[in-house]
Each structure stands twice: as C-alpha cells, then as structure tokens.
Length: 208
Figure 1 (cartoon, helix red, strand yellow):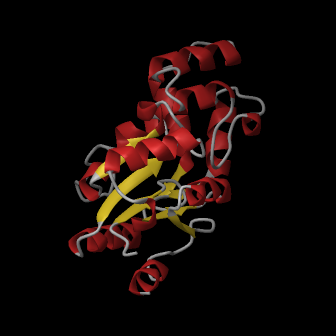
Figure 2 (cartoon, helix red, strand yellow; figure 1 turned 135 degrees about the vertical axis):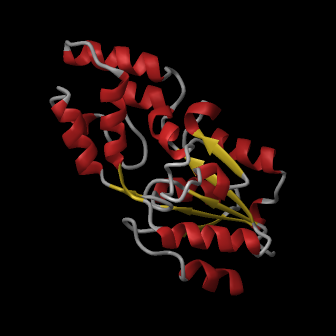
C-alpha cells in the first residue's frame, strides 16, 4: 500500500529539543523540581494541563505563580517554555518541503503548548521569515485538539480528519509509546532517536 501522508512529531524530530535547558529555566523561575513535571513526550501536572488544553496560557501563568509563590509574567513563562527548543535544523525543513513537492501530504502531530506555538507560528520560526504552518498541510496540536499522544482518541481524530487509510500514513516520532499506539491503528511508523538526522532514511523507506 503506497504511502500518501507523512506525519511528523515536532520536538525531537522537526526541531531539536533540549530538556535540560528547559528544566534550568523553570528552576530559575522557582520550580524546585522541574523534572517532576517535565517529560520529553508528555508533561505532568499543570504543565500537562497546558499541553492538553485543559488550561490556557493565562491559566498556566496563574498556576505557575501559585506553585512558586510569586506573580509570574507571560514573558517569564514564555522564556522557560522556549528552553525546550534547542535549534531548528534547516535540513529537516528542506526535507519536509521536498516531500510536499513530491506530492505527499505532510502533517504535524505534536504535544505542545501555546507559548512555544506563538513563536513557531510566527515568521521567526525558521530564521527566513516562514512560520511552521508554511511547511505543513495540517497541524494537530494537543492543546487545540484537547487530546495528547499517545491517546487512541488522538490518533483516531487525525485519521478521521485526514480521511486516510492508516496503512497509507507514515508517522515519525521520538516516542516509542506514541509509535506503538499508532501501529495499533495500522499506521506505519519510524522511530527518530534523540534529535537524530532522519532526512536520508525517510526517502529510503519511501522508495521500498
């Protein structure tokens, strides 16, 4: 069955992540044990509430203020959340663009938050005046969908919206659990290890 749709995770796949830098920044703001909240694949506590769309950016600012015992600004929250982003490798963006030019439908499946997305959906994203949305045909963001990977309902939503047979979709993610659930639907998968370069491997897979 020929692949027609390629789905990408954002952090660790399209952009390089730096969990330790994010933890350091939240610690600067007064979060004593940031690792109790932060996870490469799905955040916990009110951090998870933000990514899951149960609270918005303002709600997170208030919750972080309660937790640290001092008033937080939007800018401080944004500064800490942007600590997750290490870099935006141009080779990844070029590969996504090439896939679209070859006729594949290219979509984004991300557990993320509105602080990171405010930057990602701005012309500052790639350093060349293009927003993340300029590279993808559709973006399924956890806080907008109010669902998070690896929930089965999340993948069902994507399949329903895309109207694609699972076997015609290839999904790249750095989370083994996310890929495991995707495979239960019949989606084809590719594991990306620790910000690794996947740009050659994907074209080899597509040629098989």
